[in-house]
Image (cartoon, rainbow, N blue to C red):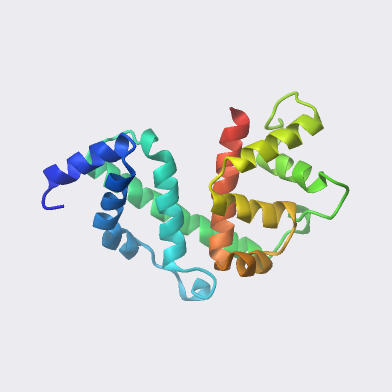
Length: 198
């Protein structure tokens, strides 16, 4: 893009659902966003810049219609915030992973047990995500919502939460870093909460 006016037009098309315009916007601002991702030495073996950018781009694509300030500067601030939030959340997940809480890990149980554990994790402490629905209906709704997630989110959740593999095992299966697995799972949980709330 040659100037801000062209960039504004590209943004307008992206907001209308033009995926080509959205990709152009991402390419235009990639260097700026990449510069924001400063991974500390402790996490460089478990997290890559590409992990943060890829999840941020996917989140932006899924949520661009929610952008409040639809100016170019508003879009850029929104993208920077997405990248910073994803980096922070990935590092927090890796920190938690270093000192796991046994209460947070599922245990193998009868059919559907890990799904019910996931539903509990997705719900607020005082309510269930699906309201008064029966346990079977909630598990059914969970699986239906999982099918609506982007593939990377769905795979991370299915392997980690439902098949109960470790973060390292999921990372190997997905050919991603541990940090990417935690981030994909976290963002997948966010989307599931929204879908189950609907």
